[in-house]
Image 1: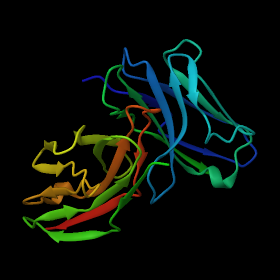
Image 2: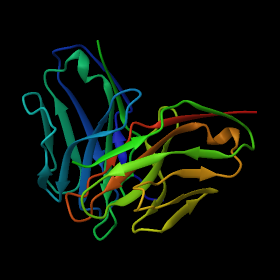
Image 3: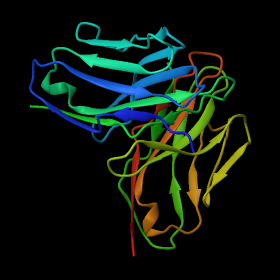
Amino acid sequence: EAEVAQSPRYKITEKSQAVAFWCDPISGHATLYWYRQILGQGPELLVQFQDESVVDDSQLPKDRFTAERLNGVDSTLKIQPAELGDSAMYLCASSPSGGQGEAFFGQGTRLTVV
Amino acid sequence: GDSVTQMEGPVTLSEEAFLTINCTYTATGYPSLFWYVQYPGEGLQLLLKATKADDKGSNKGFEATYRKETTSFHLEKGSVQVSDSAVYFCALSDPGGRRALTFGSGTRLQVQP
């Protein structure tokens, strides 16, 4: 069964350092999302891509977060500099064209900023 | 904007008990509705979906019916198992808009043997 791949699974970093996460969506899925999930809460959208274009990044803290999907396939989310409040689960998801809005999630990257 | 409200947890049940987790939504237009399940330390798995009023989504013994008149999508299961212990998220997607999922805050279910 096709899956969304994310790496790393866990990341511990010191505040003010840079950190990056990688995502490879299900093959053929044009839409890719990055969500942030704070412990005990539901996921919140950070950025949405359609192919290589950003569709929605209204909730992305652009002073420190960057997201890229240069080849229209895999994607990288970077945080620089990391802050203590960035500790969360970062989830990548993808959706097929013509679907009803369902998204398929990777296992996530658990980030701890110390 | 769009929003989803779920009952607060944790919900604690004995094995074989009946489960209901309430979910209501606010949206412009006619959203698609979803239930996702999250096991500890894992990502979200799609449990079931419904795309129009009166549709019933079902999977693994779980069911939910899209009720437009009450803007609800309550999750039910007739007999829960210990393995159903997880966090359940209700979500919506607006097919006419950006389509990204909007999630509720989640409801933790604990099933005791």
